[in-house]
Every structure is written in structure tokens, then in C-alpha cells.
Length: 183
Image (cartoon, rainbow, N blue to C red):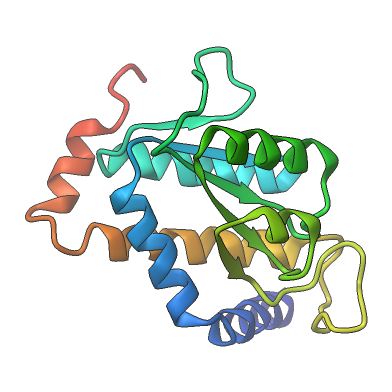
């Protein structure tokens, strides 16, 4: 078991080492500029998106997850963060198209910088990980499906938030105060 854990950890570390730091920094800057943040993803990417949205809420941002009953209309000045390994998920592409029509800024988090969603986006954060499609340019992995992408996205987006909140005094205390207390 230790060998598997070490291999998975090494794989994720290798993926994160290949991320373009300027792309991650730009997403961090866009979070700070946005009036409101909307997060979209399907399946496991959607679960990573919900974790990201929760951390953004803890950090004091106004954030919504697409598809939830309390999510309002996206507008000019808002940011849509679309998480899609392939960058081709049809429903997410529709969200990006609609967001673009409204004047919202779109940021794609994907493995594929030339995908349909990436092409609609103003900003792209490429996560050079393996997806379930196992395309020739994707790294080798012992993990099934898009596990490597999901794990890398989770850690990378946490780092993006840490960067966005680096100038906040007492950030941890403020986040703790926003943490759910109906538990």
C-alpha cells in the first residue's frame, strides 16, 4: 500500500511541477477582481469545483456553484470557473457560451488548451494530468479514470486561493469564522 501511495503522490507532484505558474497566478488575480464567482464542473470535476467553491466562501468571496437551486443569473463583471479535464463537456460548453454572452469572464481549468471550452475562455489554467481518455500527450499513471486530474486540480486550486488571500491579515481566523457552525 505504501508503494501505491508514494507513486500517486509522486505523480501528482510531477503534474503540479509542470503547471505554468503565470496561469495559476492569473486565475488568482481574476478571483480578486470578480464581482461574483461561479464554479462549474460535471462528475468528479464538479466535486472538485464544489470543494473549491467552499474554500472561496471561507475566504470571503461571493461564490455559487452552477446547477444549485440558489444560483442566480451570471452577469457582466462575474467570473465563471469551468473545470473540465477534456474541455469538451457539452453542458459546460453551453455554460461558457452563456456566460460569454452576458459579458462575464471565463476561466477554464483543463488539460486541453485547444478544447472548445478553452477557446471560449478568457483565461486558461492547464493542468497537465491524465484524464479518462488517456490521450497520447497525457502523462502515464497507475490511477484509473481522471483521478490524477482530480487530485491535481484539488491541490492546485487550493494554492490559487492561498495566493489570492496572501495579503489578508489573519486569513485563517477569518476563514474559521466563516466555517459552517450548523454541524
